Image (cartoon, rainbow, N blue to C red; front, top):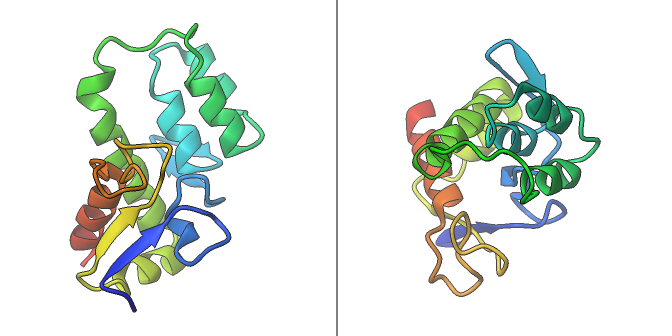
Length: 145
């Protein structure tokens, strides 16, 4: 294994770490098609907006709906988004034994979402991004140990 784990595309090694990976999660009594569906839905307090995202056919559709500038973004989103992601990621990796084993198999390696499109959740493609998704995956790995 390399010194660090880089993931982004679903079709590549560790693609399961992507929020677009098709692993349903259950949180607060609701079933979500993917962690992306849950994350995007939580951007709003509006139940009808959450339900519309929950019903989105694909994670990409859920992301597009969640990023719609016309939706009612909750006023505290910047303060809570990391915790929402933590909740989604923990649900995903604790509810699927295969994913739990895969995450634990990374040992103490640094996990990086290698995304040129995202310098917050990913590394920005040049390792200058925050890599918050990678950090949350490593936190989750520690928690699952």
